[in-house]
Structures are given as C-alpha cells and as structure tokens.
Image (cartoon, rainbow, N blue to C red; front, top):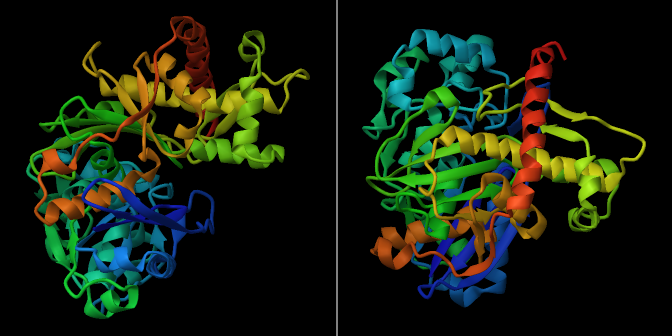
Length: 489
C-alpha cells in the first residue's frame, strides 16, 4: 500500500493506492489563499501541515487496515512557492505562491544579470518562479533576507515536517530558475545572482528515489508502520503525468485545474524559452518535459459561477450545453487572464476581459465565453510547444474541468487532437505521488507507470474546428489591442 500526498493551492489531497492499481481511498482538506495586496498571493505553511494532519487522521479513522500496510509515501505539490526558513528551520514569512505577480521588475533584473539564464534553466524569468521572489524579498525585506538559511518549495516543507530532511527533487526544483535543467543540479551562477548559495538549497534526489523516512511519532499518530519511506515525489504536473502514465516521449495531458497546463514528456532536454514555454525535468531519471501554463483555467469557471449566482458549475454548464450554434457564435469573447498570464504572453499585468456584450447575452453565453476563452488560452500554449502534425496521438484530460464532456469536446476540436479521460484521472498529483513511492520501494516503471483505462474519448469535430478558428483570431487580436492598457489598470 502506498500513500500519495498532494499539496495543491485550494486543497491537500491524500490517496491510498494498492499494488493492483486500485484507489483504496481519497480524502481532501480545503485551503485558502491570502491576497494582502494587488498581485500578491500567499499561504501560511502551518495551514498546509494542519490540513495534511486532518486528512491523514481521517484516513486512519476510515481505513485503519490499509493505513497500517503503507510502505511508502510520495509527495506532490504546487510548484514555485517560496518557503523561507531561518537557521532553526522556522518559517520566516508567509509562503509566496506560484500565482504571485509582484516580482516583475526583479525578473528583468535577473535576465540582465544572467545572460545564460535561458540556456541553463530552459525558461524565461517569470514572476511565478521562485528566484524572482527571492530577489523581491532581498530588495523589500532585506533584514528578513539576511536570516534566510534555506529556501524550500511547498511540498518539500511538508517533507521536512515528515522526515526532518531538507530535500527536493528534480521536477519541482526545475521550476525555481535555480536549476541547471539539462545537468540536473543547482546552478551556482544563478543562485549567486540572487544573493544565495548552494548551501541554502536542499539536497536533490530523483522523484522515484528515497528522500528519507517518516518520523516514528507521526507513523504512530496516523496508524502507519514503523518503517515508512518517503519518496522524492514531483511537482504537481510531473506527478500527474506519472499518475496517468505519461512518462514516454510524445505522451502528455491537458490539465483543467486552478491553472491550465499542456504537458508533453520527452527523453531529452528541449528548451524553447522564446515562446514562454517551460522546459523542466520529469519526476523520473533521464526524462524531461515541455509545458505551457496559463494561470486561470477551471478557476475561471468557478469565478463566473460565483459571479452569476449559479447553483453550481455543473448546472451552469448544462445551460451552456443547450445553447444553439447561432447563440455560441454571438457569444462575447473572454480573455481568461484573471491572475495574469504565462504562456505565451509572460504578462503578470494581464487581466480578464469580456468583449462584445449585448442585451441578448445571458448566464449561459457568459459561461460559454469563459470556457471558450480558457480553451483559446490553452490553444495558444499548444502552438508554443511547436509539435509537428501527428507527433502526439492523443492527450489525456485531467483536473476538475475534465468532468465536463462539453469542455473536453471543445478542446479536442480546438487543438485538433483527440482527448481521452481516464478512470481515476481526477486523482491527479496524489496518484502520481503514490506511484513514485511505489517506484522508490522497488517497483519498475513498466509495472507502475501504466495508463489507467480510458473512460471516454473525444475526437476533433471538423465543423467545430472551423467555427472556432475565426473566433480564436479575434481572441488574439483582442489581447493585442488591450494589452498596453493592463499595466495602468
């Protein structure tokens, strides 16, 4: 039995997996985000630990026999967050999260200070990454910066609480802008440009390697065995890829979670920073991945559901499904940049925009505009990956938005690639984390990293593809027209 812990932005999810690939149990505990100033996004690490503890106590109460059989724990989590520790391993300030946009100026400074940044890291400097956050702290909180003894990513702070070890792994570390992604080691030069050193970084393991052992007192508290290993784990998207078996070249997925992601596995390092695409290490040795990221995906649907006072996202999508083709054609356009944007714009100032509103528009047409806008944002990211026709046979669809057949079909037609949903695909990073624990316990990639059974397949509809193309062109023109106005807004 293996336990996966996924530290998301809105929830900590814990999952039990047996060696027959059965999901024995899943529980989640909600988290909230603090936004004390415009562009800021923070969480208290102590809240992560409290939520993890509550989830595992619930699993102990509901599945005591399964918990007693756990041999390994894997960790997955939101990437890029900065947890700053002093010499006593105490947290110095709230964690600055992946969707925090305060460090735009520092990104430009880092690019100027490190001419080899793109070649070493495979990425542009963006406010979401960890390195610019530390430059911001250095500039705006200098006394606190002087006390920083170690910088950890969110899931790796949980690892510290679980094991007492200061360790990260390659896929999450690649999202800091401090990793030499091709060589899979910390870059002394880029750390130095941020006023840091390798001594302030955790040690590195592969995601499928052992990073430590669970503290005995925690094993006792949660009803686990006396000897439980903790695997390196993975950043949320790399772990999700392991969970759905996307670990071989050309395999990938689309994630409709809080953020929107297109992920493609590779057996080599393939950077293309000019397109604002990400090139990161995979959670398995000798493997990398390319990724486009938009900062608001299913989050946009939650936002418009709340804005319209709809009963639920599912109920609102049912209204969208009843729209006629003519009503969809007359729907407004929506720029889905509620939290700024990464791929392909690298624009922390980008904002959400409805364009073309009229008296005939209702809740259904607004909701349609939102999911279409997210779809177009993902299509822009897909183009940035530079895949050749036929290179990708299909993409798995994961995340909360994957529950919508309407959205899945729209994505298949827009990207012109078949979409498949998979049984258990909603487990995401927690399933991949559990599988990485299994690998660390001696499992083989072919045995562990199998694709779950297909639940549904959505083929591109040529008529819908043709309908979406001119709207996508107007969507791109709308961004170009209003982008100069965002900073002043």
